[in-house]
Length: 331
Ligand code: FAD
Image (cartoon, rainbow, N blue to C red; front, side, top):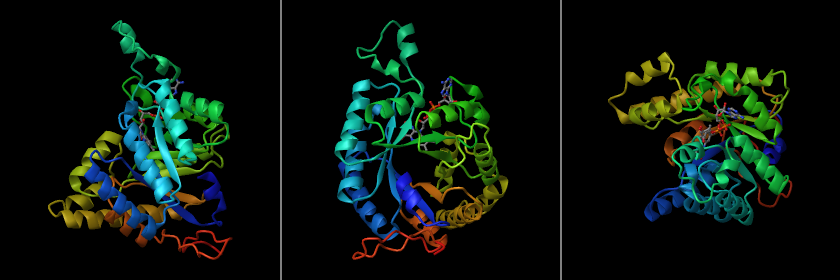
């Protein structure tokens, strides 16, 4: 991913799309045809495949990652959590990713570790190797130790903080900062953020990182996470789960049309397009990218990408030196 970002011309923008593995084979078939359409029409720089906490979707995540990387030829970033699952499962996931030709891992903690609970209850799981992984940084270190530079590693970050039962104070992004420095120094190559709608909060957060005294975030790609608005209900549910504030002006614009699902989508596309345009205009030490939490849906994100001229030109087949250019690329 970082090689691809660095190969983009100065001033170019890029985007990535996130998908989760469907539960049923019918869902998989539907997603596969949607992915084929989206990858041809939209040409994301890379796609992400989520991982169920504790390894609950391990097989399906790897299956979806295989479709993306192998069948569709998309640069794929596999999410991987490290707590509440055995080290064997971590090893198998990383090995399988390598076999599939996947070069990118988003290294996550997942839910807070349960080892202590188990210990208190006197029922340690048979394979307690998950005590090796308490925080995401443990997974970053482990991947670097086992695989050297084979994987490009991303880590999660939270512009508005996030609620964590074991660390209620983590609502403040400043609390996370030393740990984010640690993850970067342990070998993370890029940061990907939790979704947000409060652009001012994001800008403040990005500036805080860029100016941090450690220098850890001076040039690292920071990829903001954006949620296309699919419906009033989904927006409220997801923003509660992710602790993303919805600024009053956005609430008012959506409230005005909340009875009409189609209008909510249209206004949502406009809101997200404005957010992207605003951020495109801000200076950045690296090419500016955008990560879209698609919820496996196609239309809203396609409209936002079209509105914001983020879809790169197709590669010229005969041109060995061809690189993907966004229309806004300064050439
Ligand atoms: P960490 O970086 O380990 O941080 C967790 C908390 O512990 C923070 O509050 C941090 O400040 C604190 N902390 C870190 N290190 C230390 C330390 N040494 N001492 C004390 N405190 C410390 N979840 C999934 O299950 N599957 C997914 O696919 C998935 N994808 C995600 C994608 C993105 C972009 C984001 C932002 C989140 C995603 N998550 C996913 C959610 C994530 O697993 C949770 O938010 C989890 O609770 C925290 O993960 P982390 O990697 O940020 O943890």
